Image 1: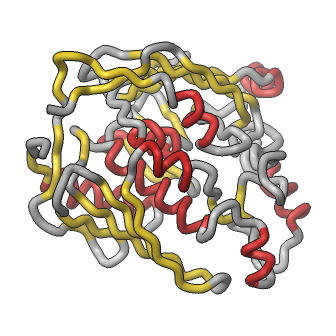
Image 2: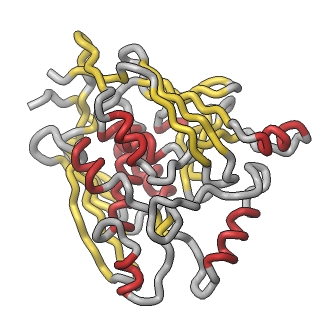
Length: 310
């Protein structure tokens, strides 16, 4: 029997959100069994549930008609990898500049989950000794009894209670790459948590110019962006385009780093469905957030079946 898990104490992260560069405080707190992952803001709360999830500007957004929260997928992937079923996530912007935007009436109503300079590793370190089983409360385990999906994202039943993710990427540099990971807390922290997304910078545009453009792209969020990082050798928590294979490899913190970030993105999928997905392999080839959500809503959720832990 698998038990539900939560935090045994409150943990806090203060970091910048990527769209406006404003500082945000994210506080994770224990929650009662069967709560799920619930985001709380000054306007109310929204549960991390596939019915509230939509694609939004190279990321995903939770929107229940009252509260909107964006850039949550990496946090959810981390909580899933660490086996956390229930917690509250309180979001509070702390930047004075954002409060000025609110005062003059042009601030966005979308709350943003912040991104630490070392990406998901910060949260992994906080969770390492802070996960507790909720005695007497069984997990609802779910699986699939047939293949579902499309040519870009498909899910297959496999033996056992694990969750595997296989990703194929095919960038001009470094070329076609393929890797499979079983999502466990150990694998996630050591092999995935620092992986960065590929920067969407047009070919030939200088990085400095792209940084200015990013800073001015979302004025309702702030004038800035949260992509700078002293943790990475290129000074960014984005993986920047390269002109040669050698330049590409030099900035990697892992081999196939961009591919590994794609694994993190897809690990958010099981965190949005009712129950804990297990005994499944997710296979990905050129599937963005729009297709991820489409497949999950149209194919995965309707075909979930209960599973007994083996």
